[in-house]
Image (cartoon, rainbow, N blue to C red; front, side, top):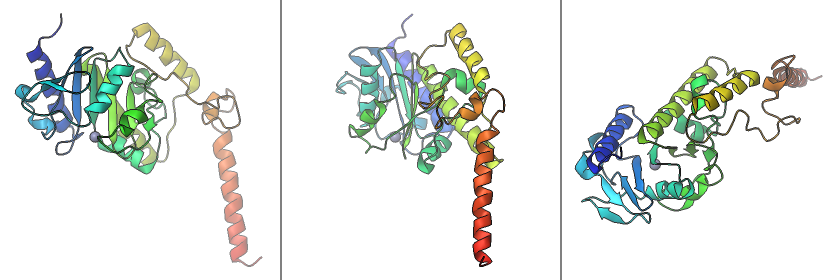
Length: 269
Ligand SMILES: [Zn+2]
């Protein structure tokens, strides 16, 4: 049931149109690729808006990025796609876009690592932020390497996002999931704060993920390296008894002490 060349090209165009319609790509931003076999890939050309893609514009390249077929030229960002295919034989499609809210998280230096929505927990888990790199150089492909084996979604610092999948639709849906998760997280922060899904509930979702046999890689329910230690960022979720009371209370106490000190100083005492 392999798709023929025209069907693949058409599907790439449709995904491009959706990315553009959703505002995930400005001007000629973003790129999409699909793997046919180890030395054959279809990808979007450079210099064309994803909203204007037509099947005749899609090009075919080999594993080194050399054009096999097509009038236009491949995007310089195709290097990161090829690197992903090299490192992850399970990946058949890669989508790169600049979804505005998720991208803003990287600009603000805020991690998109909170487990807040069951759907996002099931499909992507936390989304790592890859170190900043100059577009079109090997810096961006290299920046993916620390995370590539454990994740299907990545944020590129001060740049955008990259998602992968065993199908093009999966990679596209993952991109939508990343942005939706970022939008909800931003709204929640604006409304006063984020309440994460507690650990025991996350474990249930991880079980469900196994049962549903969701394809792709996932960082797991907890990625905190300091789990069980003083520095554990998810401690408030793990403490069975007094959930999330400990950490914020300590913060409040410190704040009160600081304000008291400032007030006393201002009063000259
Ligand atoms: Zn980009």
